[in-house]
Length: 480
Image 1 (cartoon, rainbow, N blue to C red):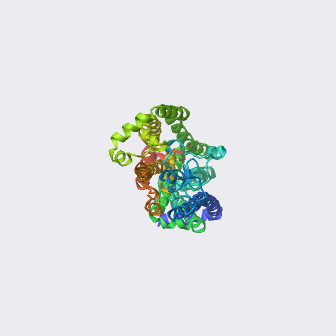
Image 2 (image 1 turned 120 degrees about the vertical axis):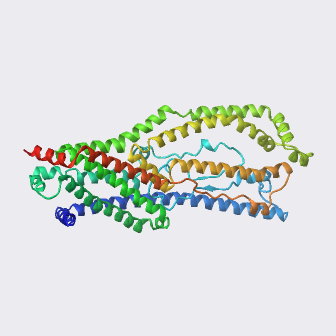
Image 3 (image 1 turned 90 degrees about the horizontal axis):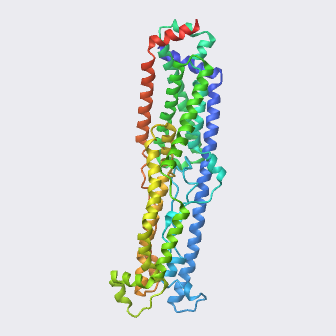
């Protein structure tokens, strides 16, 4: 009965001072704009992919037309080195397109999508894909980030919570009504807990409704991924709960509204900005990546050394692949034969260089992973990036899948080169096709449980440090 009365009067008070209206309009407008902005980013990404797919289809149409004429022994107006009947011409001039399609919830977080490309056309020439996956982007945008749903949830929502909760208890003291509360048949500690629970429920409901309304208006496809959408709503509720637990602790420990506000802002700065920046700087300092320019120069040097030993390398290659040599007794070996023979040696010599670079990146990611649970903001960012399919792990895996596809693509064309076979329409239909698969787990439920446990531990610590009796006596004493 007492709790139901508290709910009634709390809602009545919030309605009277327009707090609920301000929260609903502010959060809804921000989340709505962020969702709209995120969908525009995804739409541009999809548009770029579509343009590349259309360009590939047009090139394929030209190639099929030429192959048809060659098959009919008709004259073609194309130099011999551009004839698609040659396997290496197809492998170099008509590569397949490897595309990383956006997930249904990609609008939530930009993540690393403004740093890495979403499509690649691996050819038979060149294999160091680790060197050229970054895109040229606006440095100002990289500095300030993108205004997406993740930004609103992680950075701005806590500011609303600060304004909504920093003076729940101290306001009663400053208005002189705390003694009246002390005369009620309920402890101040329990009264504060009820007030926070009511405000948390209202705030969370407004936030979740705003997210769903924004998706209904701008991102309806997101409802198709119901499991991850549910995870988004749950972890957002838990993240909001964390900030309400912090507000509860500040209210029971600090007896001044101004000090509460300053303390709350300081905690926000520490958790949301200082800790993530410090951990990022620490990871790059402990595990600096080798110079890309130096690595590229070393790879070029290895290539130059291989060019000087091409004949020797080709003989060794054919000894190791007798099935190719046997069918080419009368064939003259040219550039492509020498190139593929030396490519394996190039890969073996440059593997330590590439691995050193990737090893440092992995160590940086692992260090950030270790500190993920120190800052709820880092945990939320990692989780929302994973839900969106825009985390660094996703792009590294995309890179790996493209590399695997390039090996399959080469394995189809190289034997045709050494056996002296011609490329036909039938071969075109048999060409390997790339399909991106999201193989990275979001870990959303594990992170949700971890954040929930963190909230309960924090709440338990606050409760232990401030007993009911001590809380009441301390606050009442401060009024005298």
